[in-house]
Length: 338
Ligand SMILES: *Cc1c(COP(=O)(O)O)cnc(C)c1O
Ligand code: SF4
Image (cartoon, rainbow, N blue to C red; front, side, top):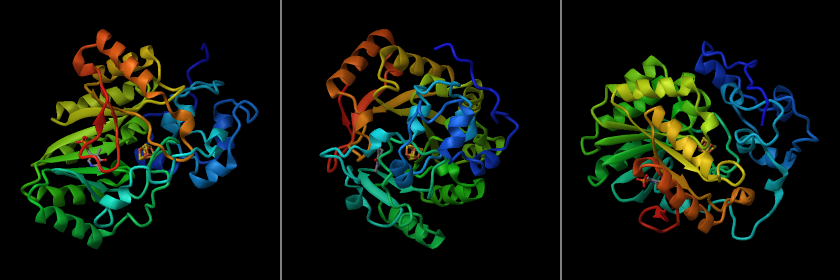
């Protein structure tokens, strides 16, 4: 599509990440106006927006194309009418996470690893997200409650890795993040801290020299898993900051979700892997979407996804081909299809 790249709105690298985070676009009409689109071109579902509101940072909007209602980044955040379709076998907690939630804020599903729902919110609302029905209200502990999570980890010598995940840990302030990392670093049997975050993709300015210092001075090995679904999400701002993290000893991986109409083409996936690698990020997981109510329109046939990955493997080195995975409740790990 020959539409010009949008550069007018605040993609100004000088805008602080805190300003970007407090100046999110939450009004669908405002987003349409910024992108020079009308509601007749891109209808909205008020019901979907009511259940899981529109939320998108301006630096991410700046990577969308003007006048393109099919833009792959826009479709990831737009409350579409297709979300109103009720689909059988889709529900609010497809991963049955409530079952492995021994204390508020902590999920212990897999051997040696626990996941902390570190932040009560995200910087962006991704429509396909399996956490769109998650009750962060009940899972956003204060310091005293976090202490119970750390006590749980201390008491279980088999836990070697602590994962800070969704909400988005990098939506926390440096002070909050640093406090959590200090607590984890103090538990000797934990050797690795992993951070799952989409913030560096939607607000690259979040990766400040202060954040890099805060991550680089750890006893534990630090892994940052970003979440990028399409090559258009990778700009020089993102790439430059990823390279700085990498230079400072942070291991960088990416996880994506394969989404119908967004990144389910061979060229798109190949380009994504190449652009990630140019930014020192290796592809890790490509998730098949979860059966979350309201997201069936993003689904792609499993056989077709496996076929795409097999073709990708022919064009790229093994280290640039992600593992196609899906989470099944009760399994000891994510299931790998190819
Ligand atoms: C995905 C996930 C992990 C990490 O799994 P890896 O295969 O090590 O990436 C850990 N805990 C939970 C609850 C998860 O969903
Ligand atoms: S940033 Fe991650 S956890 Fe938050 S809505 Fe998007 S996919 Fe879900």
